[in-house]
Image (cartoon, rainbow, N blue to C red; front, top):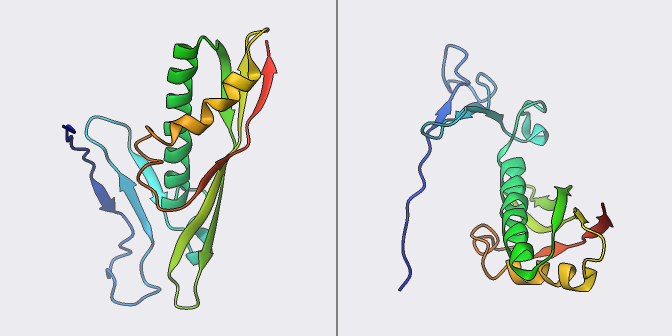
Amino acid sequence: MAKQHDYTSLIEWTGDRGQGTKTYRGYDRTWEVRPPGKPVIACSNDPLLGGDPTLHNPEDLLLSSLSACHMLWYLHLASSAGIVVRGYSDTPVGVGESTPDGAGRFLRATLRPHIIVEPGADLAKADAIHHEIHKVCFVARSVNFPVDYAATYATT
């Protein structure tokens, strides 16, 4: 039987310039993510929609969550498979679309991890791990768009 668990956060709008949402252009699209007991994350909406390009937006956070979940499961499964990982970085790319009415969605994402393994590691085995992660990663199992992987490897 599956075990349920809760995740909580506080999302607080910070964009009131003094008149609230009285006019469409009269407020900022900024907010803070305040998970209990964790650092605050200042956010804005996508710069394509007038957001602050120096702040995280929902799309950044979704893509980063997907990548981080993949990374954590990769490290776990690599360890279990005897693959010693010494470094891991990712430059994921999410492709989205916007319709004329302003609605948007992700069409797909490609995770592009660069993984440093110890000399002698079985790279075919290391690469095969990526295809197992979608079965267990909480975030990957929750999104409704395809996620591909284009990993590269180096040795220490």
